[in-house]
Amino acid sequence: MVSIAAQAANSASGPRPLDLRRDLKQVAALIEEAFGPELDAAGWAALRELRVAARLGPFLGLLTPAGARPNDMLGGFVWVEDGRVVGNVTTQRIPRFSSRFLIANVAVQEAYRGRGIASELMRIVLAHIVERGGQWAVLQVREDNDIARGMYQRLSFADLMTEHRLRAETPPPIPALPLPRGGELRPLSNDNWHAVRYLLNRAMPADARWWHPSRSSGFREGSSPGLQRRLSRWLGVGHKMRWGLFFGDELMGVLDVDVLVHNEHRVDLLLQPELRAEWSAPLLAHALRYLQRQPERPVNAVLYDYQDEAIAALQEFGFEPFVTLVNMRRRVAR
Image 1 (cartoon, helix red, strand yellow):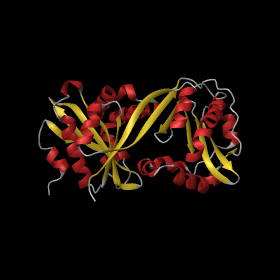
Image 2 (image 1 turned 120 degrees about the horizontal axis):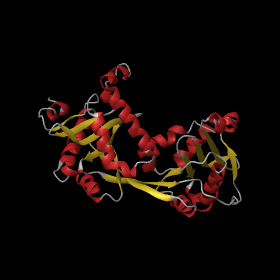
Image 3 (image 1 turned 30 degrees about the vertical axis):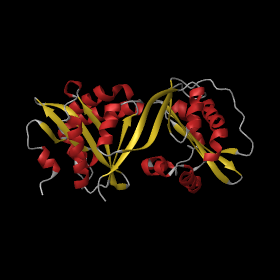
Image 4 (image 1 turned 90 degrees about the horizontal axis):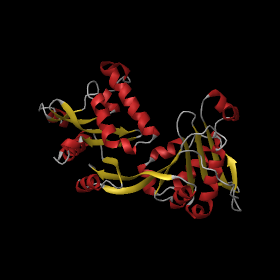
């Protein structure tokens, strides 16, 4: 059987497999053109890394782990016209879930849009995923991008959940909000990982656990050691502060603050559903007051459609919606 990659490479123009050694510079420029306004600090950092990789060119093969091909880390296809890359789609297998592939960076230069290039690249990459043994394709699209969402729906992708990214330029001044009665906030250590994992399995909806397993990958990580927290400002390194909300001996919530000296601070919150209305605002206020004692940096949060109370609380505290993404999936094989 002729592979999808070989079929796509038969023409000098049109689609062909992504070549990490020669295409990355043009792909990076295309991604910035298509997605620049919605990139957060992490997105810009990833784009910078892509440009560094582009400069490595022929040496990428030397940096690939033994037994793997460069395209195992980042594969996909480009669309070429007049010798230039004008369209792109990338894909990679999701770590720890070998049957799932993430599709990203579906982009076409503005002058070439409306010609069906994105749809054809999607058709090719979906067939490629099947060829690689994948069963699911997953992707993200801006909630307000009706054209792209319509294309994905026509390709049988279904909405899974919505991701809300919020941002404040600096930690906003927040008054101390008393914690409701009945619960106690305690710092968590790495030894609490069993309780955190149990909470994740109860507090996150099934679709959220399916879609975003990486959210649970940090359950083994507790607060940074006290000495690191005290010296982080002077050493120029960041640290994590993780608190657990306990009712007696039962963990019912986790509050995270990532203090990053050279990047944006992050806050995250996970609560049992019955506690979200009463506890979201006081806990997020606690996190933001902690950040007021840290180096002044922007603060971001990534929350989901099952966390409406936390989203509303951050907006009340002065956070602005940065971008809203719809997560979608399609079963491509069984």
